[in-house]
Image 1 (tube, rainbow, N blue to C red):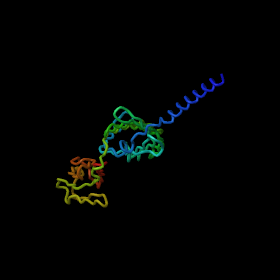
Image 2: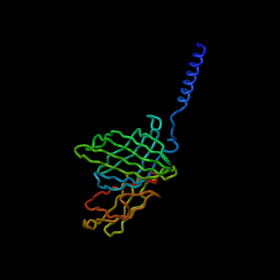
Image 3: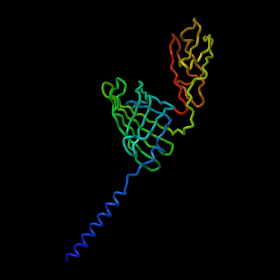
Image 4: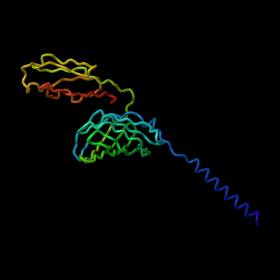
Length: 244
């Protein structure tokens, strides 16, 4: 009887050991974040505040990198996020990644200190990457006194690394008799200056500039869009390179 009991207990122990070994071998799947997700993405960023469309920023760049806070987590960065005011940088780390059909999905949330009067706001991120295409939803809950619900949608594609990084205004001219000296571009100072007739009326100083920029770059405001230069007013132009 003792001999049979010994064999029975030995069989149970072997079985338990076998199941334990199988469990140890079942490691967490590690997604290829560095090779398939990490990198820069350029696309259009549309901003909506309390249900009202605030406009779209073209050639916006968003960067994804491997987070150092855990496996299958990314850090997402959006520089110079703007709606009504320049909010600053949106950086959420970490966002948790999971595999989906045809690609990956990610989401994360973080409280960020933004410019005043926005202050500390909870920011949520959710999105998908399928091949080179990315879609992201960004939510910002702005507290008192503004109490605004900001939603931004980003649709873009992954940069290959071969895109141009040059962002310059290469030409700026006016076809107007009130302009006595055509614009001079100073890349070092980031200024463009020109002279107009001292007798020009304010209405005549609403001018239409013709602008050329670096190849595949984008300028905002666009070329051939009227601007008011009366009373020594300044107009700010932003040039975004192909790589964002």
